[in-house]
Picture 1 (cartoon, rainbow, N blue to C red):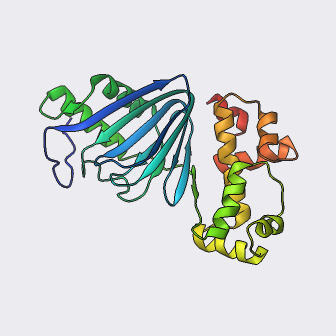
Picture 2: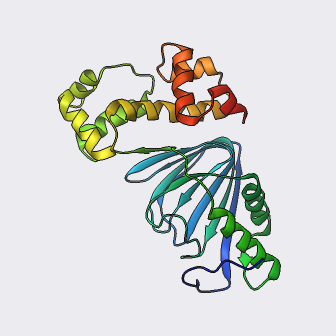
Length: 256
């Protein structure tokens, strides 16, 4: 296999570094950034990443791409096993340069990530490492994005509403009640959410609840308990909304 060449060859012979992490307790990292691009694969446990503009919830067997220079904070919910690859600048040309992206991980790519994590740093001068780098790049070129992000509004009033909902996804307060708590009118909050997140507040709230559900399901919670924790009055309504968003029922999603 020929090694896929980047648009601009990175300096040095080490093109991929690895950081495997296994923890029995929750683990958090404060806001930080890296000089290299980051791909974190959740082998078990749930990864939550917050940037200035979005929050991401990544369940097991998916991964998050974080470009170099993007400041982000990480929270990992135990028991957790994460496998992170750091790619030399400009090596991965197919993924975004300025924004994060949650991606599906194929069976082959998963095995490549796990194998690379056991190797440590990958040096292009070593034939086996060069082949492994090439296979990683080929697989990354075909990954598909999944809707696991939640945009964060910038306006302080909308942020207050968002913070309240994040703290209590099961809150059933009306938009008007939430707006009053944030010292704003209902129309103002609706306008701010649509303008700053590209979503209506109802859509934003639904996405928040579903991402919270993804985390709870990954932790082994029963579907009925998850539906209540996410503010749904009936399990059937929760299942219908979840299936429409993710293409599978909560039970089948958790099993897969």
